[in-house]
Image (cartoon, rainbow, N blue to C red; front, top):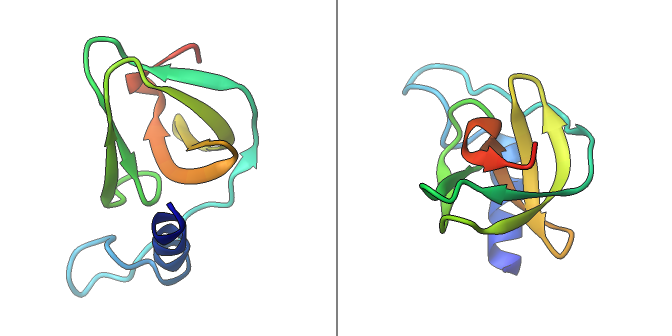
Length: 98
């Protein structure tokens, strides 16, 4: 779990894994304060991404997984985690309870 957190921090700081080759990477927006829990859709799993809007998939959650909301970004993106440890970003379209 520590390796994933370190990787996510590295990606957030450097922008690696985003954009096309030769295109400048977009920095991840600073999360807005948010709290509560959400559940991934019971019909499909959810891709957890390194950053909102096109970040690299760093984890795939099973259908019906419970996640803690740690932050929010424009466009319907939520920073999610488990036990207050950030896992990455997921779009509201694959969540229930938000």
